[in-house]
Every structure is written in C-alpha cells, then in structure tokens.
Length: 171
Image 1 (tube, rainbow, N blue to C red):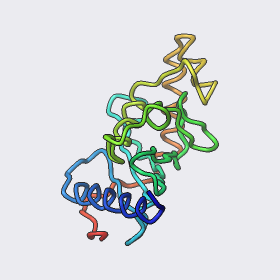
Image 2 (image 1 turned 30 degrees about the vertical axis):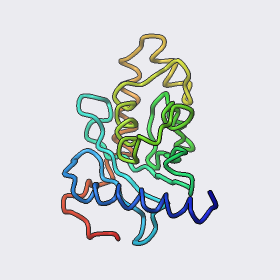
Image 3 (image 1 turned 135 degrees about the vertical axis):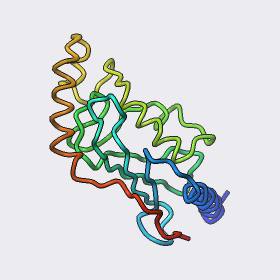
C-alpha cells in the first residue's frame, strides 16, 4: 500500500471517529482535532477520576497519529503536569502497554483516552517512569503518594475548564 492509500485510510477512520465523538455525551473526555481539517493532531481534556487524587482536575493531553493509524498506536502525552508512576513528569510520556506493543486497530482514540483515565485511577508501579511516585506505591505509602498527587493536581490541573457546550462540527 502506498503512502497516499495509507493516508486515505487513516483520514477515513479519523473522520468516522470524529463523527462518533460529535454525537457523544461523554462528560469525562473531550477529544477533538486541533484545527478544522487537521486530523492527525488532536487535543483532549480528561476529568480526573472521581475518588482518585486527580479528582476535580482537568488534564490536557496531546494525541498525534501518523498515516499508519489505526495499524499503529497514537502518540499520547500529558500536556498537564501530573504526579503518577506511569507518566514522565517532564515530558508527559505515558507508559501504557496498549499505546505500545499491545495496540490493536480495534482501539480508537477515545478508547485509548479511556485507557489513560483507567491508568490514572489504577497506577501500575512495577515499571515506573516517575520513580518517586512508583517508590511510594511500591513501599505501600499510599498516603504520601495521594498527598503528592493531590498537591500537583491542585497546582497544575485546576486551570483548565471542561467544555460545557458542544463544539462546532470540525469537518
């Protein structure tokens, strides 16, 4: 398959996903392309999971795909600084198997965002990108981890507002 065919396939898939998003009433994830006609670069806002140390925060993430999507995973990174064992605090890189070797074309951008939300609610400390956060959890010091995560939540994730009105159609 040549690059034009790949890009056409990717574009068709992303337009379909966008249509589904425009019909969605999901109030935990807001996901849209960064600009009209720009389907390879998306921004998302994630509400911190209730009951987690991220509760009340709104986290910005960037979602970038290339012409091999959906055969290859999107590149998803946190824009908002977050204290989490599976997120590099400086770069926003996320350690999540479905964003790497466990990716399947059955996944969509919204399902990848849901997986990130799930990871926020249930961190995996065995292979941390943030060793401080991982060490707190592995040592069983959830009070310290939760306190640090809540502190960073207050400093970094309370600046975004979650959209309350539907956006204009983007295609």
